[in-house]
Image 1 (cartoon, rainbow, N blue to C red):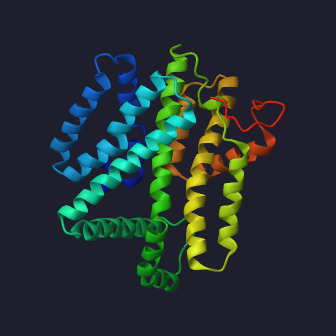
Image 2: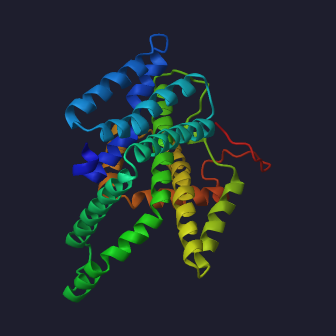
Image 3: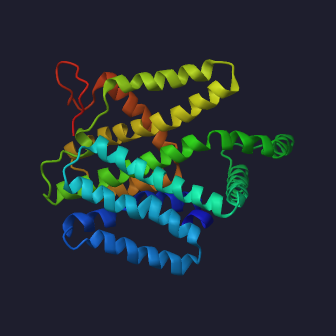
Length: 301
């Protein structure tokens, strides 16, 4: 519900909404407590929102993904496999519901979603112009407003990358938070958590290819490059978060550090870009010194 009124806060909370369900599923898997909590919380969403659309959004993004995350962690699946499976679950369930709605409404759902995205984009642009860090001249302000339709079409072109990056970031957030909570409580100690996880180093070539696509003077190539860059950059955000988590553990930083950090990310999302840069640099600098002496394609979990 917060997504409609306060998009940044709503999306930020959506990243963590599946964590309690995952913990419930791990602690009481015989009673399927996580599944029951998902059903009850979904019913609460329906009562408060009075909209099946938000119920479906909750089930796809937080409910089902949270229960699946908990079950896979309980079965000691590695982090990369959990992220892949949870991401596929969110994308698959959402695509199925949208396809079903498309046929049920004879395509009308497309206009509804486009209007929703258009309203959100207009609100975002208005807030940006209002709270711009640098003054915008009246002539530039008029020009930007005149270009809004073209800017919106450009936004639609890279929307798949935004959605996929949001799905991947949600999966990583759920896994990392649940893992760290269990490690702190000395449960499932066979897992090492996000602080010891890293991507195969060869993945950096995907990032390089995405940058190369941006240099090709063709709209399709540049759009494809931006979409790939959004997704691969999000994955490296997780690796950067692993570096920061490892550092904070070695310095014994407390809960207040994470509260302040979360507040800063909420206020200034560009901090996520810094985490992505740290994750990419970790390929060469190995900040945590956790890679084996000989380069290996296997990941640490």
